[in-house]
Image 1: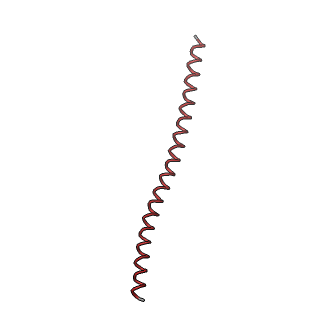
Image 2 (image 1 turned 120 degrees about the vertical axis):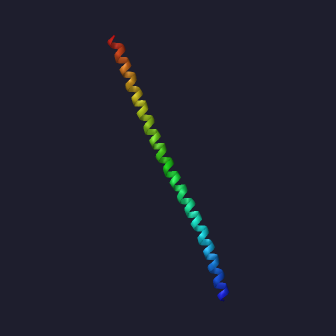
Image 3 (image 1 turned 60 degrees about the vertical axis):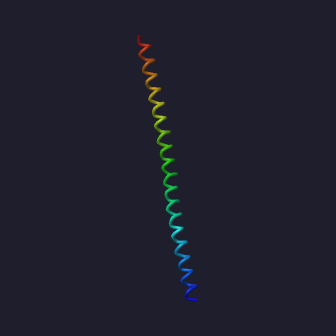
Length: 68
């Protein structure tokens, strides 16, 4: 009986070790997914700002040509 209990405890410890490894990998994967979304959002905002700045530059060039 005692031997059986020790065997179960050993198996429990192995399972706990495996679960901890998977939890760590899952945590890392979630961080990567979060960061990817944040990076995509920042790139989108930067592209919008760049397009808006391009529109402003085009307008200034048109204004200069009209004043000549």
